[in-house]
Figure (cartoon, rainbow, N blue to C red):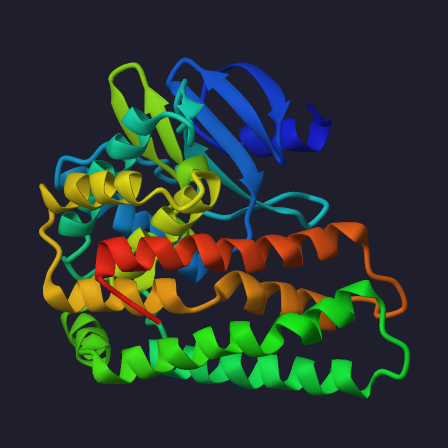
Length: 328
């Protein structure tokens, strides 16, 4: 460990025994337990809100979180002599949830449901989602049309651009259908109720942020928590899982049942999930990535990702029919 990082640890009331570098951070084993030192990607104000969320969850009986530890001055963000900004978090001797193990995915779904029930208590300093799903889809669709216009204007087109134009109409239809389904649903009502009731989401709930411990489960990296529709968390977790399991409707159903057993899913929330899964999100992301990239050269990997997004929409169509009774 670098000397300046050791100096940062001196700013905490810890009896450090050993340290070791991990992916973008440092593990710190102390007499007081295991901790993780990492660069702070958030403001002091945001760190304070994050700390209050942790205190609220711990007080409610959910102790499996990477709660921030204040330094000896009482601050949550510690600034080094070189100007680096750091957070120290409680950590766990555990491994990440294995997305290939159905049992652990079920544990993850149940864990999210428990968190969602607890995160319906308003917390000071939490930010609010500033866009509704309708606004997000409108923006995404504008961006897709913009990319298409740009690609069309290119005099010489590479393999990615040719395939993009070839598949564009079929994939963009999915985006339009998602908007139609959204407008016919009660998703806007659900969104407004979520804002009014100040229910919170984790913001990045996936298997990397779920730790399997010997005595249960822990959830980490709440930095993106905010007020929003809680199904957004579940959608994100389900989508990341389905992409790895070839849109297995049976697994989807099992995860839904695991979540619903603790936190029942309403008809409005099912409508929200339906509108989310219909949208060709992977297509939009790849189009955006291409548009921001160096257009002089498109990697083979981008072409492969694009082809994957096309095949995934076909696989996803079967899931939409089986789970939501949706027919294009």
